[in-house]
Image (cartoon, rainbow, N blue to C red; front, side, top):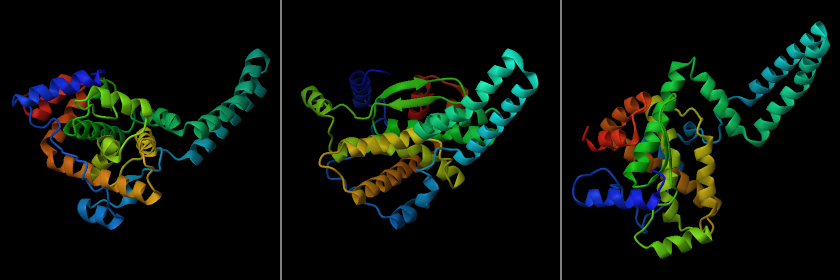
Length: 283
């Protein structure tokens, strides 16, 4: 992982020899129609758009604010009773803590949500299981779509993966020009947009509703669509999001055995090579 061109060319070469079947097996062509309505999304997948929870950050901000005020009050009372230098520090903390927390929640809600959610995984086994399945779904979709891996972290509560946003072509000059412009065709970002939705879709398939804990992927999704040239209309943006959800559903539904194996692998912290072997059935 880490080298987009090298990983893509190596896996493509191995696939060309007949050893890989799943890698880059989902074709997205320039003729693809990125158009789905809410009703079409639901009829194709059984998922209502609101169940994807794309606007959530995985926690209730109001509850966090109330908790911050409660902690600040305790610290303030403690400073009054204790006095001295320690009392001064507690008094200072009582004022600083809620302001800092509210500031982080306003500027980077996804960062605060990530901290809160990962703390929750220590005590909530069901939330942890959802997190594992979200990551496994994301990896499976990206692999099927042929996106090279940028980062693959093992251990912790679950393996975590990040992909390069664009699949390199066989033309290095064109790729370099496209990246330099930072402007893409709609088809160029299609693979990544599916991956951004795959975690939420995986949760919906398993539980009927996503946890709303993948705010970073959602941000990436909209950043990619904002980079499309010519610019997408608001209606086209929503159509593309729904198309991405349907495509993620098709990939995950067609690869249920591989997904189940990946869930165990991600929970066990298996390395990238073993996860690929599980997908390809060579374990």
